Image (cartoon, rainbow, N blue to C red; front, side, top):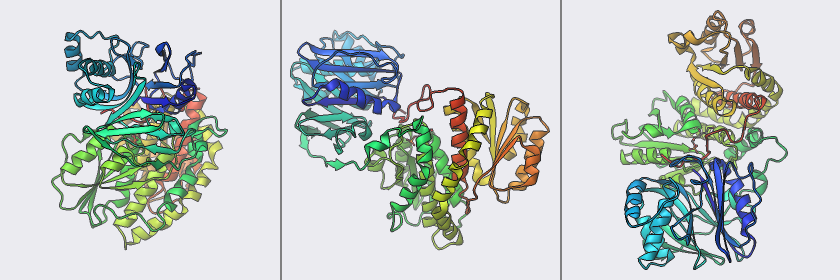
Length: 590
Ligand code: F6R
């Protein structure tokens, strides 16, 4: 987590740094800081809060600088711990994204060598380590190479040296991109941050150390000069603007029909070749919302008669819970492609003998580079911290994968038909926004809620609950309908609403029975359903009828409905929808 940026060129660095920082703020927003190099040395400014919320008048002039927006890991949220960090002599300023595992040992050693620290962070240790290498006689690039060689953990750093006016970037395990301009060069944690300035970028690889100049970059790897491809970003600046919507989340919810359409049409000749075409076991590994997409994938493929399928929480993969498969396919799902737990889980599965396939929204992301194969969702950049359009596009890929792996079956045929209709079904769901608004605003009265479902709506209960937690600060729990009576019933009362996701399938009568039992406990019932049934009206406080999607893919419309309900619930409470407290979009620490 944390966002880093840098600029070296002919223009004033500060406005470029601040606006680039705004665009990586979703990576962390508890404090920010900038350092600009000029005739006075390196001037630094730090503040607690998000860059666009507590913007300050910073008088710095100069055409070279670095910046950082923080999601605290080591050390409390404070100006002292905000980046950039310095060495003892203030010759070196550094911003860091990542996590240094051996920072305590390094700090002790450097302190014994006479270094004085001013923050509690692991990041400051890197600045002093570079200072030590410089004082041993190295020049900046060599010093960064030597210092990073001693780091355990992950880092993407931008280092500024006052005397030589040089800027160096290095990375391992944390993302960084270098943007090429005309006589100017940009650095950022990811490409959208620098999209207004350039679409031509280089992605340094793990272990690369790059000297960044106004003319471009010189990259070294293991001490030797290397060249990396210059790539063109096809995202548009308008995609990272609010475009008249009150929040990015709302805009991104409404972009879903197009995002789904784009994801379907991105592979006109079908999905690319899979690392294993005929697996005996498929396992999904992911975190958070992406994990829920995996559960939908598992549901769509379950009981297919050809291969077994399961889903694992990527962060629980310390011990791989599988025997060595003869033809195992591990599908790692990550919208950012940078989630540390998912990457570690995928690597664990690879070591256990699985071939790996990444499903991600970000081209050239770490996971895309590490997996044996990759399939992209084409959702466009997602700015709001909460995943919305990236989730529904993941569902599309899940359905396409299910159809591919079960090719030749009736299920595959009906899934392909359901995928084709999905953009319109999602559009029709969005047209019910007023109904979701009124239900969402109604739910703002409550602090706790249950969300129940069965079969195809079961993964959506988890995703909807996550959205209510993040966006509306409601303690929502997704529970399989059948499990309510095995304990959670004890919590049902007039102040604990139940949101029921009732799909028009074999389970709907069972769901109805559960709703009657809930009604008998006085809990208010809200129902989302694609199965119009008179009996539901008798028990529910409110019923919203959704368009029907066949082939077990109803998860998509139930999700869109619950996204809007949580959005309007959070908005009614005046919450920071696009940046919920304590969160960050890209979780690059384990
Ligand atoms: C919730 C959300 C998170 C992410 C999770 C994994 O709205 O966005 O739960 O889904 O942190 O992130 P990715 O998909 O980037 O691996």
